[in-house]
Length: 242
Length: 369
Image (cartoon, rainbow over all chains, first blue to last red; front, side, top):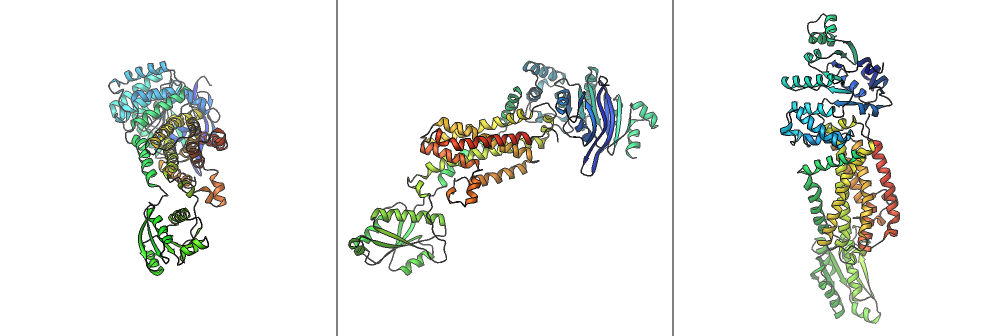
């Protein structure tokens, strides 16, 4: 089991006072898979994700990420995952290079490795001309691509992306998904939340969360068949409206 | 351990890139040092002085001469009787009224004793205390056999001699104030900087990005602490140079001892700042909490009011005040030339305090909530 699944979740629950944000969800994510984690605003996606990446303690239930337990081995999980948050979370007052160096350093990469990675990333992202500009001055699309690259800096097994393409133009969104495919091709598991249903179609499998529960989980094709819908958009509307 | 280096270099980049922040850290405190050291004085000059001379002899005129010769008193009025003098004081024209009784000279020469009546405007109790001390000094210098009887007008606060007189005896209060104010500035700047720091990252969301990395809590706190420690030491250095150049404050003790102590002291303040930063959710909250502590620490440090004159419970509380130790040691080392063995006890207490604060800082940093 451990060898096949990147993430195993069983009855994972998070309550805040009397409010249950995540209600006993269970699912598995296979290695190398692009897993779409869908749901309306406030459905509990981000809360669930925060438990998996080890920054929020689950109220009950079990989960293992990269083979490590979320209750007891959250620091080991962090060595093996990358995370890109909904809110841009790199330093606006540092340059592209300095951000890469800082996070590379935090992940314990060697100086040489950091240099190699910086060079490669800046080339891949086409940021050569702005390598020495402050990140705050970059357009959002570039920032998001940079944030994704920084999340991939230490070659993690699993990368969590929380609405990575929110507010990004269609061209950049396309480039972004090319980056995601490239990562998946290289064997990385990707756990992605999104509000764009066309993006959901790009995922290998998709789960749809409604009011803290996972209401559907399958490949986009099967989901469309099952709900007798033409697009993922219709599937989502059927489910989310209840 | 290399992680710490990356955090420090990142913090310094951010601090030195922030053009608005640099002057706040380095220029404002030094301006404050210069302004406060010149302004915060216990010395009172040009005290409006009036007298009533019932005696009209060589002795009484000689005494009045002493007052006009002093830079502290400005002899403005000679009143024909006490009633007029009192009226002038009520109207605020004089702050000190000296009454020399009839037969003053005779008493002094024949019985070798004499008494004088002095009225002091005690609306500002501290000023009145200082004035009373000055008067005593002048009178004693004139004739050791004289006794001054301070008359307290009904309804005004009782005058007490405050111990500040001791430091004023040298008539150079700056020597006394500059080290204290330097302590205050180093404390304020480092506490605010560290107090704002982590919570700022919380606000802009970068802390979450750091929390998903495998960084060790202790590395993170050390990395956050060291840049401000270096800034604090830098501030102390600039302040000491200014104290020497502008105020000519002596440095009687060991500079090494002073730096050694400050290096421990800063750990207390920075640990406290980072604890506040971890504990709060917004920079605003952190600012208010830091401000609350700074005000209490400074007012209870013995910098402006002597700890000896505080009530028992307050004196016990000052044991918990790191600023108190710093002010004490700064003055001891700079002005008295105290050596290591003299400051060992407060140094030890500060060290324990530093350990406690930093354990709390590491403990309060939560990567998982």
